[in-house]
Image (cartoon, rainbow, N blue to C red; front, side, top):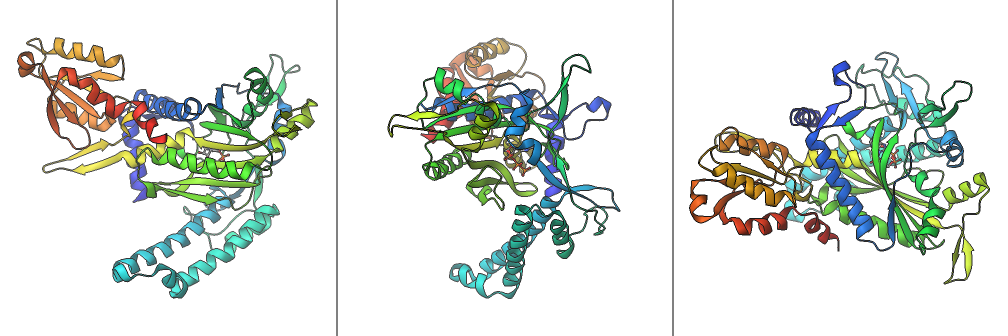
Length: 511
Ligand code: ATP
């Protein structure tokens, strides 16, 4: 079922120019994707929503665009050379490779789903009088699965913290986790695998030095902290935002744009006075939750998940998870990174990275709270919740209910027929609208077919010019979601459209 939905979204993305497999002509490159004409528009709109929410709406956040190539010592200092590893495991029968931690997490999620199933069954049965707390503490099935989860968690977290790879394997064996392809538990040992891509900088083999493609954009912010703070005369607390590509040689790269080897991140590092980081951590959690929910994809599609094991740099961390077609998975990470990164760069570069805080008359290495969201995962979240096969009286229509401010095309302007001066009137309307919004002119096929085409790419409005328009200066405006058609004057069009599709309408929900 979940697989079906994902398959449909992949097929729809290809058919309508949202996402193509990279190098498809040459049979494709695994876990690398190209964004097509509508996908690029949607992606740009997501970026604009994030950028404006961060940089425009916050006086104390500025944005930068740092290079993908960086000095190799940066990745030594950040810990990526030594510790940016994933534990991999192979199934000897299917020859498929998995991430050991992900296999365990998925098993745990299955147990969770069993509990949820019992709960919703009981909720239906008992109705109003249902007492969830009592049910959780007395129902034998729920209790059995909860005990399994709790015991698993204790072992799992300890194994991760101790970096105990054989224990990770033992958990997989003891939990009877089998390979979904072969159905067997004929597992290899668990090994660590570094995710960074390495390449050469320089023309000759002898003179070339090894560098990495950045696995995250954050380090580009850290190494520019002093530049930005000084040149912008920034006062703590302040943030630096960045959108850019990151590269990871992912072990298992399936599930479409959820896990890619080349992807984009939208990251913001917020520099604060030591001791205030927990307060900011909570503030940023709330802020990011609001940003996501303002999209209107449904509040229950999100949940917070505290990390099982804190990364080497963090003193608090949580994920915002989204209910993707494959279940709840990480969409964004919010981390309190202490002064780890700046201190490391201070040590490795030999340059002082400190802030003099006039309010307390003291110098210190700032602490950092980071928000890091995947652009492609946000794209998939929006696409998967927007996609609907709607049953109408005589047919079904595929409609993408993309949040209007993010829709690739905001308005399609259509003359009813290709003659009698209607195209000219339509083009005049188009000319005015395109100054403000991305619009399309569509005069081919019947109006019904044109509506369906626009529904399939998520266009919020269609405007039709007909013969009557020549007499009364009125047009028909059709709403994507309700399919309601209304006759309005050409003059009023602009405010109707603007009200619904402008980025500012969306941004105002955050204020
Ligand atoms: P995961 O546990 O799923 O591998 P992560 O915890 O390693 O993710 P972070 O390092 O916190 O991810 O990166 C921040 C964000 O970047 C993630 O929340 C996710 O949205 C995005 N991201 C990370 N890896 C990928 C990838 N391979 N493809 C697409 N997006 C990614």
